[in-house]
Image (cartoon, rainbow, N blue to C red; front, side):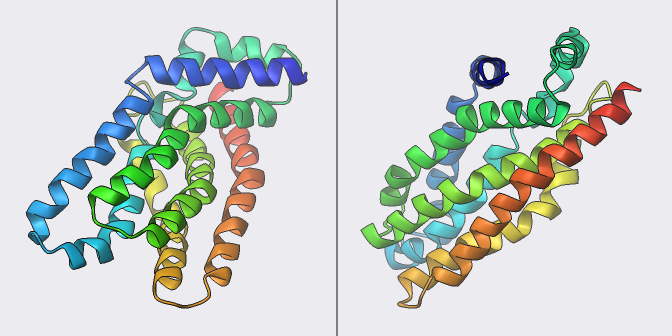
Length: 222
């Protein structure tokens, strides 16, 4: 069971990297935001440094949703999902493995690239540290929440941006507490409370996300 779980997570990561660019697409999206923001607010480095963490979080939120519409649909179309179910691994663990694989291909590269993009926006070392930390905690929550939307549209031939529309309202709390933790740390306040709430959201989505997504998949497969 453990070997199949790890193999499934690795397979999903490889497919995510190959289909739609995966990590490359997310990093390009990040770079696009970093490049466009100065044109919108002007060459005011203190202002860019203040809004930089929030812009990086918004970019990470949107980039994480890229490719989620194909998370289960491709496997259903080619029959792989039925084979996974017949393997004996509970559907909830199948969802968990695929969500982890998707995060490894899309979320983790954003975390790794955040310090560089933070420097490009003029953020100081303290802000960059907390942006990276909060993204490391929060991006898995975005993926697990997104997996629910991906499962809901599996029965549809063309999901497209429907996943983002379905999922986006439920990811706002993760965005709020991620940005709040960075703002508290850079403003001289204790960031422990927003960090703990963010961690709680991540743990809650880790448990509830696979269960809800598995229930949606069962309904789609019936």
